Each structure stands twice: as structure tokens, then as C-alpha cells.
Amino acid sequence: PKHTFWTDGGRELFDCAGQGRIDVFFLSGGQIDGHGNINLVEIGDHAHPKVRFPGSFGSAYLYYVVPKVILFRTEHSRRTLVPQVDFISAPGASEPNVFRTGGPIALITNRCLFSFVNGRFTLQSVHPGHTVEEVIEHTGFDFDKPSSVPETPAPSAETLTLLREAVAPQLAEVYPQFAAQIFGIGQDRETPA
Image 1 (cartoon, one colour):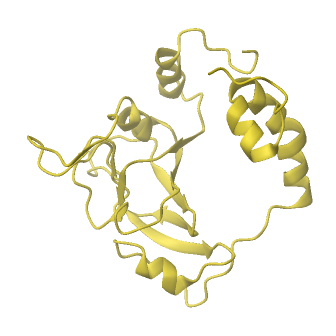
Image 2 (cartoon, rainbow, N blue to C red; image 1 turned 135 degrees about the vertical axis):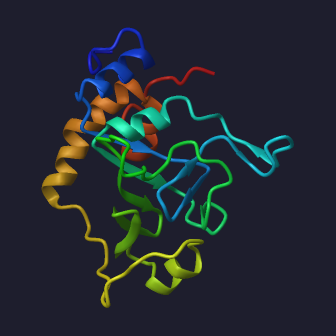
């Protein structure tokens, strides 16, 4: 596609990240803990896991070299946001003697937005329709919060215009089903079975 200069997939992604040519990366995991560690491998005993995830691939590398990693998790529950991950696929922080240019700066869920500074999450805002008490109830790790937590602001008119008129058409070329579902564009195209 015309929106990516890559011709060799993952290898070029890792090269670009290592060269400092990727500023922000979005990353998720089956589990995320309060230290910013993510688990993309398994839950339970390593010899006999209860759940097997797709694997780490390059998450640990990207977590170290991309300056700003935004974690996301669409299921905000004690099952997914845990006190300690069962397997560390990528660590949220490193020992002081480890050189690291990247790491987590935030975690966004379907309930709220956290920032990540000095190895801890801080609740930044709660999405409309949710409460601080609900976030506390459904989060398995401890986090900091200000005395008054604001509501997550709605996107500005300019941001919505940018998303709908510039971003959505480009997404439709690469991710037609996603663009159709989220933006309602490209629905006239036939979807391969």
C-alpha cells in the first residue's frame, strides 16, 4: 500500500525502531501489571499453561527502543490488569544500569486513561459514563490518583475532522473492515470470505 514504505514487514519495522525512526508505538498484552510489564505468552504454570497467547514477537525490543509506548487494553478488569503478570514478555522498567530509550508512557482502557511515570501508573482521567470507584474496583494493581480526577475530554471538532477526512480513508485502504466498522466508510466494497 502507498501508506507504508515497508516491503519486508517486521524486519523493517524493527530496523526503523532501532534507528529511532518510530516515535510512538501502541502495545497491548493479555495481562498488564502495575509496573508496566506485559504478558503476551501464557497464564499459569509454564509447563502446563491455562491460557496460551500468541507470543511476544518483537514487543520486548520495541518496548526498549521506541521512545513513547502507549499501552492499551479494551477489557479493563482484574483478569487483565493484574498485580503481577504471570510471564513478563516485555518489562515496563529496567535496572538503572540498563540503557533504554523507550518504554511505557500511558495505558488507555475502555474505562480510563493512566499515565506511567517512574514505574507507576497514575489515573489521569475517567471516560464518560465511568467512575473512579469503578476503575478502582476493576483494576488489579495499585495506582496513584489526584484528589480530583477529571472526565476524559471529548475529541475536538478539529480532531474529529482529521480522523474522519484524513485518517479514515487511509485506514480503509489497509484495514477495510475496521474502517467500515468504526467510520462507516468502504462498506460498499465486498469483503473476502
